[in-house]
Length: 178
Image 1 (cartoon, rainbow, N blue to C red):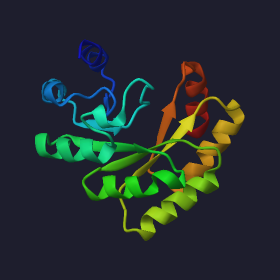
Image 2 (image 1 turned 180 degrees about the vertical axis):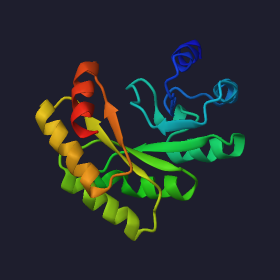
Image 3 (image 1 turned 135 degrees about the vertical axis):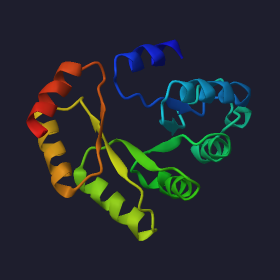
Image 4 (image 1 turned 90 degrees about the vertical axis):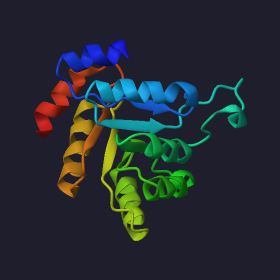
């Protein structure tokens, strides 16, 4: 909470992520109240990496759509969901959108064509919420710029950079795509 407050005080837009893995119902309502009291309007939910010593059945939320359903009952925050563009997550993403996710934030992907196909398949299922493309900075800067320019030309709803301790690289990319 204090970290979020410190960053918000620097006038950056903050979108906290809530992971199913470390989310405990008893603590969640207090966390949501704190987030709302800071004037934050948006959150992102994600599954997170489940450690080997935790059984999925032991979690309060074993998937994102359970967490989204719970949050929709408790808050008016705008909820975004993370998703991979891989086929095995597709049905979960559809369900998350239908129960109230306001946007989808994808994990990084290698080929833009896979992302375009993913969008086409979502639209076929009448999922018309914004889809924000996840961009990894672990590729060559020039390749990343071309990738982003292509996505912008396609009409992507937004880009979500996975900075991965490469903030200087992001500045260079943004200078070339904006």
